Length: 442
Image (cartoon, rainbow, N blue to C red; front, side, top):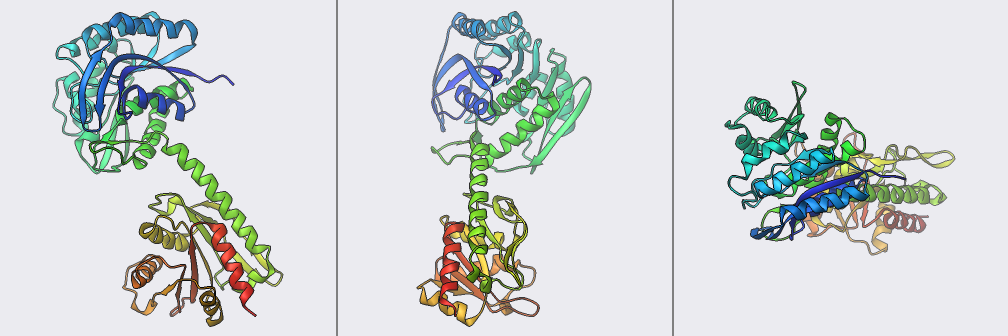
């Protein structure tokens, strides 16, 4: 299968969080082959840039020539272009090879270090005049437009001014406005389009701008329209920020592999929940453990924070005259109650990723004790108004014994069935545990 090639023309980040390194990781994650022409080599880490060595403009141009001589490249992106001479050399090659280029006009790094010489900005008009898109943040857009930007209206006025420099489209990134809802503004063909989403973190992240422009270029190379490419790139960055890496002692690198890792973990959780559910329904002894409301079994993704990070059955395992019957299939968000329980347990102990419920009875509880399981409980009669039972109850049970137990039970309440929950590392583990409990019951 032929995959698209995309060329990144940018600087090297020895800390691996931004620059060429972020670009290549982004392109690989999105299914395109990344090529590079390095413009500068930096000595940097998450705390800042200690030194920069620019490569000669003619060598930057030579890298582009050699790549273009061998690969079929239609799209490129630019990052760190630190001097007017390098900007002009890149502009010349973009025109020569008719590259559709996404320009990320990097002026300073996320840690605050300058990455463009004074006076170099005056040369960027030559590159923008042949750009498919330019993607400045608020600070960069102010420099390019000469306007102060304090609102979305200001972003739109600045986008129009930047468009006068020649790019086919302008995307101004709104993260630096500091609002809880982050809005990016795309201006093309005289029209505006806004892309908005909740702010994920107040931490200063590293590699966001590089990765966004690379993701847009990758999506364009795969055939997306510009609007669709921006939308998909934002989704990619959202996952990368959510999965950001706790490395170093300064700004926080985003994780370009987070989306792929999430897909892998989701597939693994779906498989494990399905196998565990099948194990249960195939054992005739399990039917006596099924409560009136049915049984669900869930598995949280690593670092799960919300129900959307938990795989559970869309239906339940129910008791019928012919035995246990599995309804539904594993999916993200498949069970609210068990998801709430596992999220709280996972917060206290990251090793705990799976929960299932079984019928409460003194006999079932005694079977748990005879197996030597750690047990705790909560009392629904003490539940405060307005809380979610499984969030509150799970936390109460954990705090009661100072750790996450293997069993949490409650004796029910008005209109609420008494229940036992089994907690563990994985669905297969707690399914096997449930069957051991079933074996001990007459």
